[in-house]
Image (tube, rainbow, N blue to C red; front, side):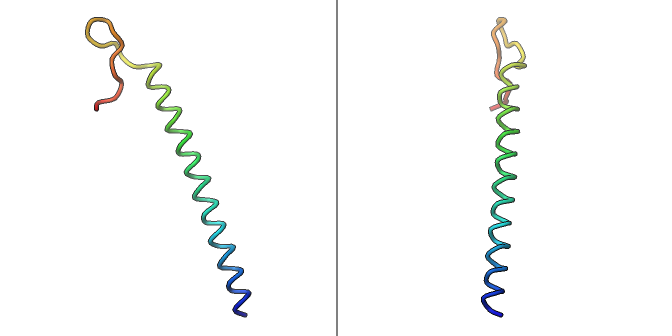
Length: 56
């Protein structure tokens, strides 16, 4: 009974880690796309130069 519980616990941990890593990859891709779009659509600053699209 104990080995079966250990195997089930290991499968649960690995599934959870796999799901979390996949979610983090999707979040990283979305942030990268937004960051690249920020360079393409940034507003013009003073003097006609391209300004920064972020506040900091």
